[in-house]
Length: 179
Image (cartoon, rainbow, N blue to C red; front, side, top):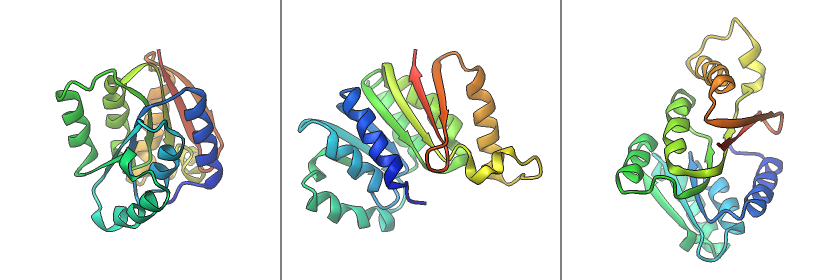
């Protein structure tokens, strides 16, 4: 469930290139993706990190401290949809530069829609696991996560709110730029 070092290194480069300052990390797990983002953000940068597990996210907290970036990470423990709705309700629309989505696959489509509201124009999204070990190409694969990813991939091909690039980095990463 942990993102690969190659993927995180590439995403760090993109964060630097886009001069991202305010980011979302949807699906923190043990904190690696939040750590990687925080490491390359400016000193006043912020990662809003969304997860439901105190158990797993607590693993990352000590590494955030050790790396000297804990002050950049705002961890919110509740369903990500609730946190995203709160951000929108709090007037945070069009204020984020970047979002990384690597959480419960069944909600990816909803996350994309909420992130669209929260991103600035030209903001960047990276969606992890879009190839799902090749299962998205297998017509006989009908488990909930695979079906959700198949539907997301098909939808994004026609969603004119984004420029799109699908890569084979790690388990497949889709990049979206808000137009």
